[in-house]
Length: 271
Image (tube, rainbow, N blue to C red; front, side, top):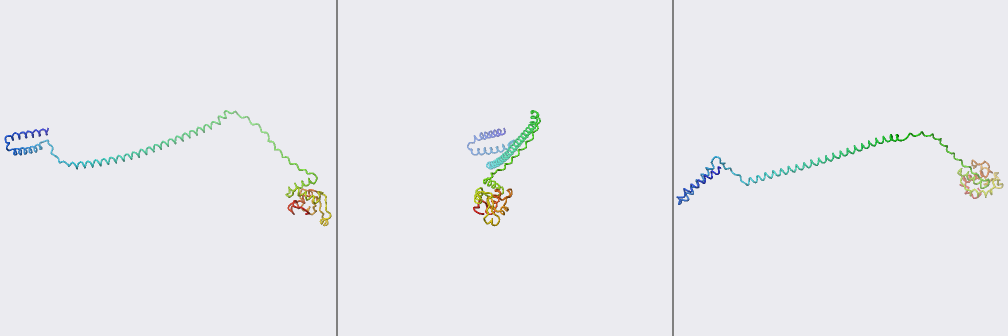
């Protein structure tokens, strides 16, 4: 409204100036200068009209744009940094919550497993406790056991029968060998037999009355021609104390040969 009024007034002034300038066309320059001076004066006065805003000094446009750009960039940087910090904290919080949830789920699973095992063990124990009772109820009472018969005494082992020997040279040699073995005296069947044949030809009563022993009063007697002092020194217990006994004569002579030659088997001549 105010601008419209000012414009209307300015237009009316211009029109008045035009009407007054028409008769004096010759002095055109003066008329134009007068009109311009009046127009300027009118504009000043119009600016001073009530309700019109006083002109404000303008800030250079470049400075305002630079300051606005700097402020906007700083605000954007702060906003981006804040958003990044918030996102990192949110990620850490989510990770912590996820770990806590996993740990809680694991703990609950372990508790459930332990509870199930405990329940199973309890059920098995109850079943084991009830089983003997059920079996006792089903099984009839056992009849009293019959008295056991006394154990038979172990049969006594029969004593081995004593060996029997023939009353001849073969039987005498075999019996002498058994006695020699029982007393640890070495000798073989062949060693005894060979020396018997050479000394007495198998006669248990043979006696030598012509050698040095006979001259000294101790003739050689028996199967192996043993003199009495030798028989007395090498007689073996368990045999008759008789130099003419064929077995006693053989064992005493073998005992003497063991002490003197190592064995009757080592004797191949007069000894």
